View 1 (cartoon, one colour):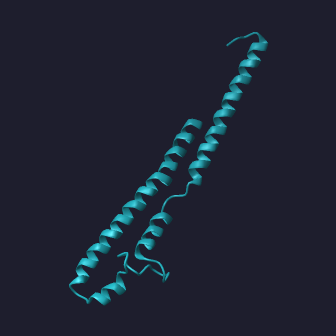
View 2: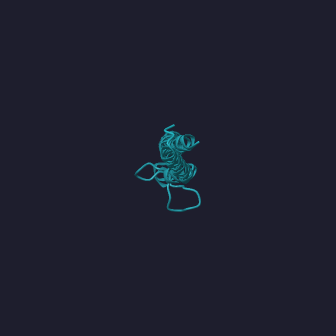
Length: 122
């Protein structure tokens, strides 16, 4: 049982950290591609000054949800990061598994010591 807890905790930490980073990178890539496609479409439809209102110098869309000074990329990054699972269940699982493993080993050593005192080596 302790080994299972440590293994499951390690898997949880993987998905909560490394997988979350990969999802964030993928979301940012998709957001940047959407911005590029939208800008390409808008270049033929609106004037240059209107285009600069929507796309400032860094080519990131200016709208960012409910926060006025946030860009589209910042909004997508926040969504990707906030949707990641929390780390604490994995850490708790690993700690509980390690405590259980050490308690089990201690009990085995105690039993062996008692058997050695009784004269029964097994």
